[in-house]
Length: 266
Ligand SMILES: O=C(O)CCC(=O)C(=O)O
Image 1 (cartoon, rainbow, N blue to C red):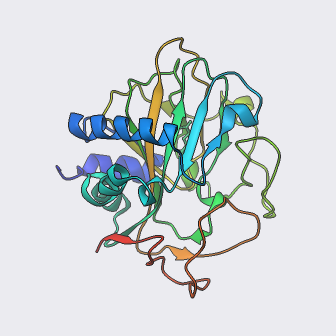
Image 2 (cartoon, helix red, strand yellow):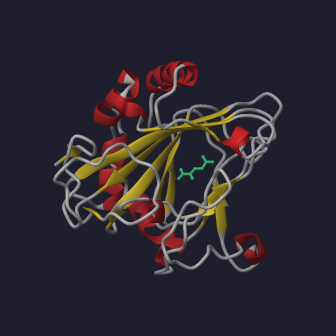
């Protein structure tokens, strides 16, 4: 894999989001597409169907910690450029996989991804937390390109998680995400037309969301991986995103290193 450029590192630091073209080979894309089909036929324990949950048209397939049951995703975590990209852009000396996911919006899926920050859903704390979103299909605004509020990771604010499936399972006392749509004229937004093999990396505090997939025939399959760097520690709180059993012995404030969140670099 080529190294990240100084410009890419600066863009990630300033904007909280950077798009990288052609970082994953056609071979990775093809293997991941085949793996996605296998998961959709035979999903894991943490799989959810978000369109069905929200009683909306179409299919938004969501599965989490896929690398723990799917060999292709496991090798993508260990052997693909993903960990190196996150490590270099975060400026980390060590990097753990936090978890990976399929986020697949099929054509005609109405379900939007609400505006949110990632890290407030998770039992971790720190600054080197990022998400790599890998396109497995051509992506544009029509079929559900993710939109980001540029620089929102620098607001020094954490907002209450919003349940993707509707309802509200999240308990933490945090302010609600502001009405981002009403702030269209005041904020800077960015989204990317992407090709299979392109990816983005965004900061765990960058506000982002996506429209439904309004295309009639273009799927929007993404393999998404979440990464943690040097200063990230376990920080359990009440009512967060569902996780597999937390390794016994891991205490609040401990580094993540464990079977659940293995160190991939460093
Ligand atoms: O793929 C989407 O629609 C949302 C992506 C997202 O929220 C994320 O990658 O953290």
